[in-house]
Image 1 (spheres, rainbow, N blue to C red):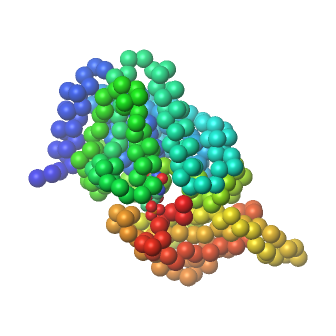
Image 2: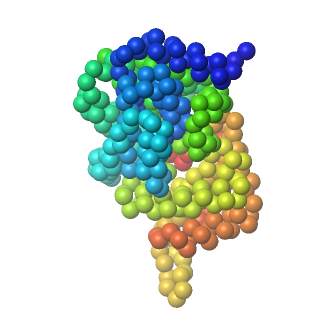
Image 3: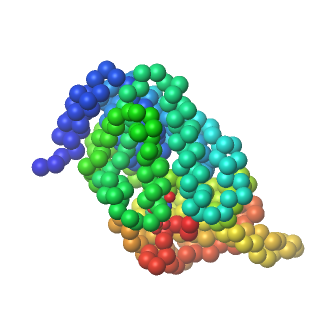
Length: 317
Ligand code: XMP
């Protein structure tokens, strides 16, 4: 019988045997998988685990700071790297979704590799790969899959000549959460909605500017906090906001405005492969629309996405 406690015990022993007194480097994303994987490796080898957390400028509002703080609180040896300008620079003027993904995946590897080469005596690369990633990466499943492997630093092992440490390789998501709970990882990590590796870049349709990222972070924060306050966050599988590349006319006081539109997305799903749009209460949507338009400068219109997957996808890019 599989139990989280037994899994943790066996896995920690296995990592100890595999790594010995050598060192492991690992990229953290703020997501459930990399966090649980890192904590298991940390349990096994302590300070010989070196973690890197990259701010690509496409995370949610305040996420880099908050998550980095939590990692330190967990006792992880983690270095935060502000690479925002590098990402914004390379993404400037790029509208094509796949191009955005390629640039982000490539830059991420560059930044990680550069940091990792500063560390001496690293023999292992830790990764939060879970069983569905293993299956997906061998099936032909559309663009998100390639990037998922990018996001999990696919390609790095060969380039860096390191062995992999992948403690979650045979687990499904719910098992990862149970293991996380077993080793005391905060619900802030465990209960999180999935968030794509390319982050807000694929939720800003068209070219990305720091101003647009800022606008979307603010709108997203109002929406996610609103979902939590209304007790709806845990009822949906994933939710987020999308900044549309259109401006439209509105009126604010006596003034005519010509500003951007934000689309709200919320879906129910089991695994993200298929999804239904969530039937959020009208009162809640009305409040979100008011709050976003009042609080976020540059947005004068809010719409709700009522498309399911298929034929739509969860993300808009
Ligand atoms: P779609 O939009 O394909 O999304 O219905 C399904 C799930 O995958 C996530 N997603 C990504 N995750 N890199 C990722 O790490 C990506 O490029 C990517 N594209 C989509 C999406 O957020 C949803 O959970």
